Image (cartoon, rainbow, N blue to C red; front, top):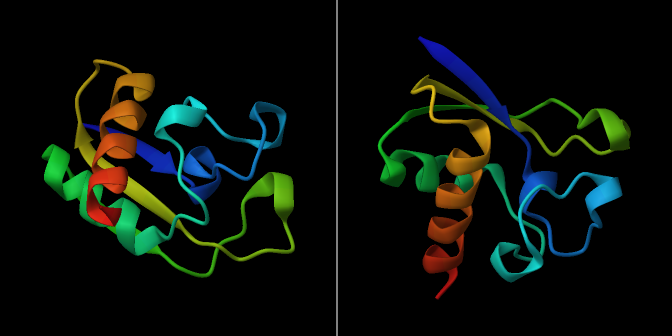
Length: 93
């Protein structure tokens, strides 16, 4: 079993790549939440656990939380992030 950690910063359109965004701007959204990310992870087909009181290491003063993804396959974290980003956008439409 592979577990991945997903931070809201990975999908934040207000951040640059050097600030932690890991998806293309075209897939990013403004101020993503752990609830949106967890729902998107479930839509992609994985189990999600929200860890709310955790701060992203690059912005250690902001407790944005994170999502632990279990049962993720070995296809790569990048593919997982792309799929989750697409669902987060769909949730906002």
